[in-house]
Length: 418
Image (cartoon, rainbow, N blue to C red; front, side, top):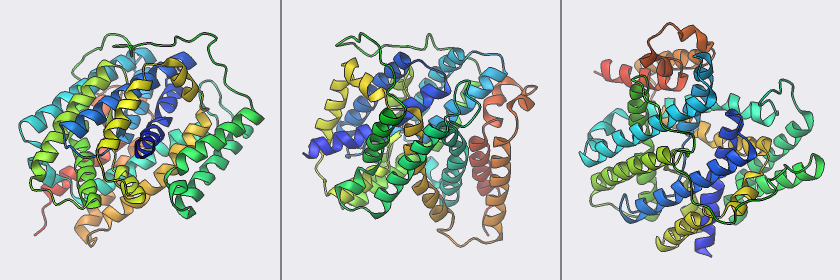
């Protein structure tokens, strides 16, 4: 039963994002199924490697919100620069592989522990808040049915999406025990059933292979240009804060006083690099250790590592059976977006807690204000305004999340406290 619970947690944490990415990139049902198959496979392998050789803690890997932001922004900037959506996906393969290389080197050369001091509560709080601001628009469009060539709100889909959103929110806030822990999964199932009853089920392919191996470079051969290097480096640096937060939270929940926390962080960073490389090679969505794993452990009391290991093997196993993946992939996009929007409510609270963790003096208020204004302001600028910038800068300066987070890191380092 502990293995089953871990497996459901891994599944619930990963199921919605491939559907959202599929909608952004106008993928067919078969392409979304393939993306989900490859994502499940990479998540299972990454979680297994981390548990056995990386940080060696029961921390589930899952698609990172930062990567959803990068996928979403590059879908727009790519089209503005004359690239097709498929060409953009091939560039993203390169970015994930390069990010993995940077993370692997950070861990292998023990650079990770030296970079950690830049991730103050002000930096992490700003990152989380800008992430929610940037992605809330994408999720809300999905909830309202505004995807593909649809430019008007689809009332039936939107109604079911908002019902799903409030079901998940209520279960997460007021339910107890397993019902609270699996609020997201329960909400998705209820919304999915409602969608099938009132709107209709999504058409599935007539014939699906019973068994298939996840495909390498499904988007095509990766394309490289210098403009992706700074994006990959900055992404790797920001992901470090996520890795550290997850490891610290897990140790606290498990009641472990680590004798060598630097070794855990370096090992976790190096194997996150390997998992990013796998995500790029298998054309999946890059993943990171999920800080929410600690909440799962605290709620269920499951502190043993072996059930977690067995669950990761089970996730790898089902990735080879397309009929199972096709069934999961048929979750309607408005329902998947509603589930993600509900989970981001807690992220807003985490952002506010981080920013207000220390007293906000004039210096901190100024730094946060500058980062928020320019970061959020960039999100509202048409991407074509950056067309005259060098290609190496376009993907950074057009991403409000990277602009705002980069600014708060820079200002904190330049403007030191007395």
